[in-house]
Length: 83
Image (tube, rainbow, N blue to C red; front, top):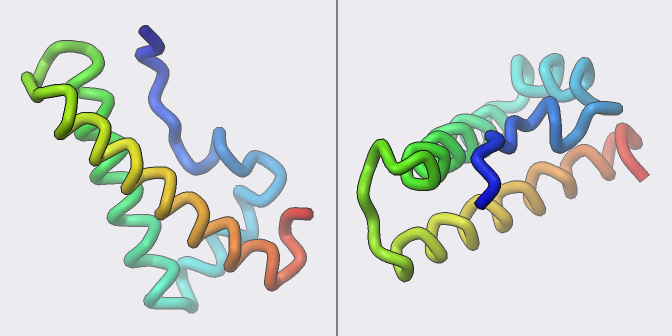
């Protein structure tokens, strides 16, 4: 099982700087990033067995994380930060 956190800087290394700048000027993107961070941290705690959770709950969190990542990627594509 992979216990490495999926931080946004790792997911979008080529856009880390622009992502930081955009979060400061776009409240929606900031909210997406905050929620992504919270969900990602919760998954990390589950995967490292710090916080117990059932398989269904874990899968729901992973789906939410993926959806948030897709939303963030869409914003980054619109500004040309990623391909």
